[in-house]
Length: 301
Image (cartoon, rainbow, N blue to C red; front, side, top):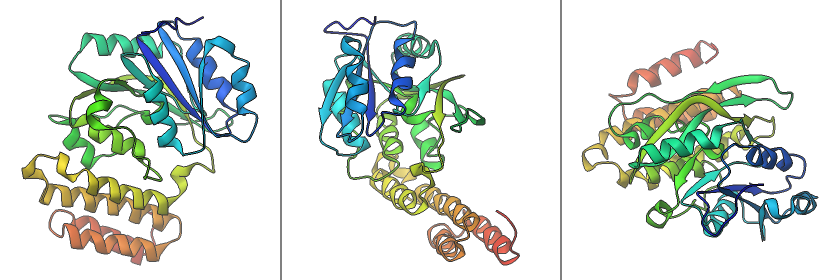
C-alpha cells in the first residue's frame, strides 16, 4: 500500500474520462512504484462508462474525485486542488509509468531546489505495444522558457511525465480550461517563466499513440498553438517579444504547413506559408520559399 498521510511527498493526478478500458493500467503502474510516500488522485471527469466501477475496486489505495465533465484541463485542475503533496505528478489515463520513475524524479527535485518542474524521456507506443518513437530530452543553453517558444514540444513526456512543485500553481494559475488542445504546453511555458526545468534522459513513461488521438486534429492544434504563443508572448524578456517571437510564430506556421501538406490539404498549407512571409520574411523567408518549392514540385514534406 502507498502511504496516504495528510502530507504525502507526492500527489499523483490521473484525469479520467470514459477510461474504463485503460485507467487500471495507469493506476497499477503508479502503485507499483518503489517510491511509496504518495497519494494517488484519480479525477473522474463525468465518465459515462464503467470508469466509476473500475475505480471503486481499488478501495482506499486511491482517492477519487468525482466531477461533471469539463475536459482535461478542468480535471487536472481539480486534481491539483485536491492534492496535499509538496510535489504534483501528472499521468494521463491511457499512459503508464515504468518502474523507478517516481523515485528518480523526486530525487532530482530534492537535489535541485531551484527546479520548479521536471520530466523524463518517454517511449511512444501504439496499441499493439510496438515502439513508435522515443520522446527524448531537449538540449538547450540559457533560458528554457526562451527555448520553449522555439521548440514548444520539448518537455519530454509532457502530461504523463511532468512533476511540478505544488506551490507554483498559486503563482502561475492552473491549466487553461478554455484551450481545446496544447493546454500542457501553455502550462509548461508559465512554469518555465517562474522556475527552472530539467529532464531525466532515461525513458520512464510510456505514451500511447492511438489513431483517434487528439494530436491528429490539425485544425484544433493549429488554433491552440497560435493562442498559446500569443497569450504567453509577454512572458518573454522584453527584447525578445518582437523579432524573436515573430520568428518563433513563423516556425510554428512552417510546421503546420508541412503537416497539412502531408494530409493532402495544400490550400491550408499555403495559408500557413503566407503567414511565414508576413511574420518573419527575413528570419524565416528561406523556410517559406523551401516549402513553396517542394509543394510546387509535389515532393513529400
